[in-house]
Length: 152
Image: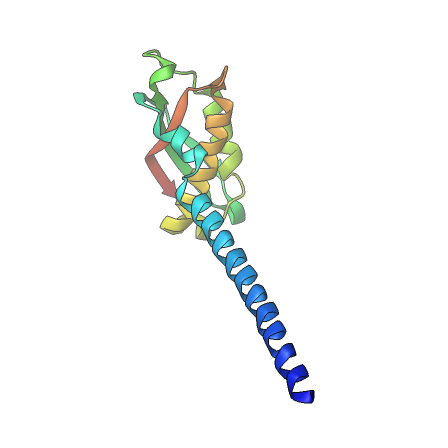
């Protein structure tokens, strides 16, 4: 009789264990599927930027000189890539000058001497310019090109 009791309990344990393993597998597969969905669906922000069509390039009329840290300075010239939504007329670059001055003032020469440092600061400047030159949800500016970049 003791043998019958042991044999009766063994299948129950394996059934419970089997159910736990199946539930765990479903959770893992479901989580992986959800992760794959979010990874491969794309970023809506980058999709919106891809739709922007390049318009005219508006060069700044003159270079600006910005005070850097430790007595150094930066002589900066740039051009603004407008979107097609901005039309053929050049945007007023007064605010762009101010944004560039604010972005670069107080930076160190070390930050600006590497390509990675310049690219990081440029991305910040572009983001601020896009925000400043967006009217009625129409982006008027999409990029900035340096025409002059001299530190001393």
